[in-house]
Length: 528
Image (cartoon, rainbow, N blue to C red):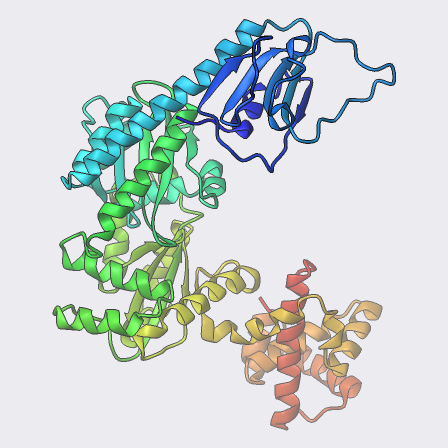
């Protein structure tokens, strides 16, 4: 067993009046001792507890000792704290009880010993090679609570005896063997999850729908997250020591899973593993694809696109549907893409025909589903090499990000439609007037001075391919009114709109100005 000075100082930080930490002294302590006048040597592997007045004058090693002292001596009149350069030193007020401090230190060593024994038992279970079930049962016994292992797709890989689980949602997850998409969407909206997911340490999760606290530790193989260890605080409250044990369990599970990269047996699982690896931009992507083809896996080919579904706005309680509703609906609309859960989104690879068939005109039911459930869909440009998945995944994310700004009411956004805006993003801090065509500046100034609407009128006219009736209908004005406005515009800007170069520059200027103003939070004058 071993305890560090950092652990001890953290434990006593509220009681100590002074802490001096010599970080050059990195030895972990194997035990503690009381200071007596008979001490002749201070060993670096011990931390000593006693009265400052009781320090022996001639003991060896006191300059580099680790001490917890009750200050029963009068401080210098100046009131300045004396510095003992070589020591780890913690001082307490004269009212503290030396034996109480000593007993608390002993408890720390005993707790550390229990943790080490627990780790040894779990490690022995892992070395025995009996698989995840043995590891998870040993962890549950040691932590006194149900323990569950899930993979990145929220499939349950192993669980201890969960007959006593009181959380109805987790009881349902365990019964089915996987977590519903409704559950996944709700979990990732929890602030504790959003904060904890960025941490390498185990973190606690609480939600209003359950009185049971959950402890989550990420399972990683190398730098790649492959799942989570979940400890349900059903039997007893989660304690601080459980955080370390959960993390240790996650390490053992990772070692077990690493023995077989395709530890799940279904073809769907192997496909998920492949796509996850490609999204992580693994260098051995071509090799993964070759191995998958040799195993007979059916892979998307031809004109491909990456789809990214953002479920952040989805609220299962509002929809009032059954638990598996979202999974069923996503399978209905995206079954061919075989969606996987990746970094808080659902991600799939689609062939070009599937993407084109989902246009608003051809498949209005998809848009209705997305709108009614507050789900957003980003679609990358087409590509042909499956190893380029990550590049086009990032495009689909950009489509989502820019779509929220440019078309907040449109749930389905193609990167091809927002690529211009993506190119403008590095210039987000620029003044929109820097990219505005001089003619548009003239129209804006005229509108402000005369309370007119020529700026918006010209945009609508260009957008509708200079068709009078279509533009008039969009603006809700008479054709004659539109003709009058166009004559005013012609007199002000003096540009020949039959020249494609003029039209292109004006229209691009509208788009760029609109996007930069939206990024700057000034709203949109026209391009909605």
